[in-house]
Amino acid sequence: MASRRKQPELLSANAQIDSEYAKFCSLPIGSEIGSGGFGRVIKVDNNSVRKVLNTDPNLEYLLTNELRVCSSLMAVEHKNLVKVTEVDQKERTITMKWAGATLRHILAEDISIDKHLISTLLFDLASAVKKLNELGYIHRDIALRNIFVRNKSDGLAEFVLGDFGTCSNNPYKTGLAVVTSNNPPEHTFGWKSDVFSIGKVCWDIMIQIMKPWDSKERVHEVMETFFENYYRLVLRMVDPSPLYRPDIDSVLWGVQELFETEECKPAKRVRGKKPT
Ligand SMILES: Nc1ncnc2c1ncn2[C@@H]1O[C@H](COP(=O)(O)OP(=O)(O)OP(=O)(O)O)[C@@H](O)[C@H]1O
Ligand SMILES: [Mg+2]
Image (tube, rainbow, N blue to C red):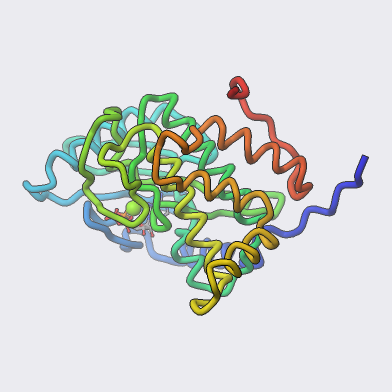
């Protein structure tokens, strides 16, 4: 049997992730840590934040949706989903565990992008989406600003998916609150739309190692050398047709198989049956 390579540090930005936590802890309670189209987020204590929703009649159906989905997620514990601890329908607030710095924030720094980062990102996000799917939800807004990064006790990074405002349990729903380049090209946002968005997030991160003037052939050559079969999996995930795109179970199995063959991560166990 081939000997296992020593598992490298996942992110050279580990120290930076730690410093994000230190920065958060140093903020006074009640200070605003960020805001988006749906509301502002304030610090509650060193472990929690609270989203105070806007009152906008035009967005009311989405804000009500966020409160409803978050209430149902309160009972859910999953390492790759932001933990919702309290929902106050009257005050229109959602209290959550602090989940880390956003991936958008971390990527703005100079971190090493390699297949260890991509493999963990793929596995963690696919695990999060599988859990949401089991609960009947499609996320529909998987993007850098809604993915958080934190350090586990073993020093490796862990990715956490949050912001459940656009979650839907209707696979035939058309139209989205936010139109982003991570949306799939089909007009409905069915079960495979989250697979496309995860693939697109990974693709966007991978492509950062290329130069704008590199030829198409060069892009494929370098990406395959650098990310090996993870690149091929990501390409399948961003297939414009949902028919040819793998489902979330196939993605999880695909990454798990690559963990073994690429020998870059110890295998993790995936629940459920291997798809045929
Ligand atoms: N659970 C959390 N843990 C840590 N930081 C959080 C958490 N939830 C939100 N934040 C911070 O609050 C900011 C605002 O979040 P919010 O989801 O309201 O807006 P957004 O994702 O930036 O934009 P939008 O949701 O409007 O598309 C985030 O960028 C992040 O910095
Ligand atoms: Mg968000």
